[in-house]
View 1: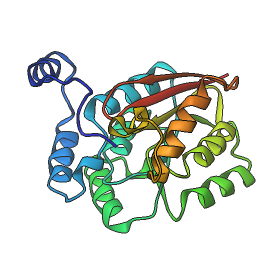
View 2: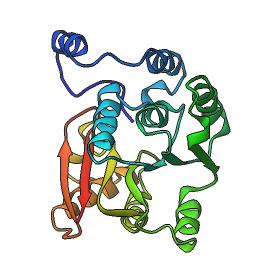
View 3: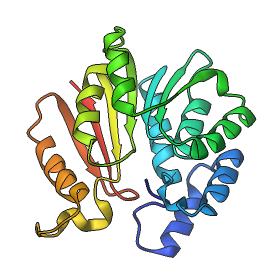
View 4: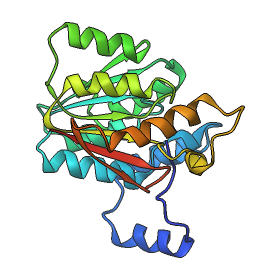
Length: 222
C-alpha cells in the first residue's frame, strides 16, 4: 500500500491535489485517521483509489474483489463509486484494522454493499471458485502480503471476467525490485521481482506497471 502519488516533488503533489477531483471528505477523514496509526503508511494512495474508481466507472463495474482491506480506504472509495446494486467481496485477517473499515463503511452508508471475510484470502478465493463465482467479478485489487501474490493472481484470473481488471499494489517495493539479487534478501523482493518480470510474457492479460504510489500494476484480462 502507498500513501501518496509517485511524484518526487512537493510542489507538483500540491498542484495535482489542487487540480484533480477533490477527495471525498469521508475518505480524507479516514486517511487522516489512518496516518496516525503506527502502520499508516500501508494505506493506498488517494490517487490510486481515484484511478481505481475511475476504471470501475469506465467498465461499468458492479462486482469488486479486494484482497487486503487494512482500514478500508480503497473499499470505501469503491463502494461509493459502485452503483446501488454493486457488491464488494473483501478479504482480510486483521480485526483491529477492519473494525476501522467497518466504522467508515457504516458512516458512508455502504455497509450493505460489502461482505467481509476474516480468514486467509486464499481460503476465501478457493471457496468462491468452488461456489461457481468464476468470471463473475469486474475488477479486483490485490493489496496484501507479498509472498502469496502469484497465488492471489491466479485465483483472480479465474474470478475476474474477460475484459475485467486486476490491479496489484506495491509492486515496486520502494525500488528494491530494481536492485541486483543478493543473498540473503527478503522473500517478498525475490517473489515480486520474478512476478513483475513474468507478466509481460503472460498471454492471458494486458499488463502495465504504473509508477504511482509504490507501483501499481493494472491488467485487463483477455
